[in-house]
Length: 71
Image: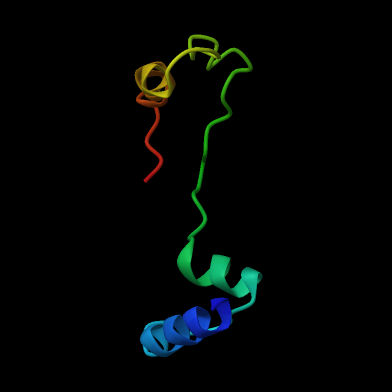
């Protein structure tokens, strides 16, 4: 059953994908270098909880990054 499923996916997605592309070429073509990326201090993310709910880590993770512009 799995081979038929894969064959169906292959047929359905055939016009959607281009590739394969070497990893280095992909990174060079689609991810531009970011000049002057600041070094973050070692204690930059100490406020991020290590236990509990995942949603509780979002703001403590993002808040320190708001000081920097990455785009």
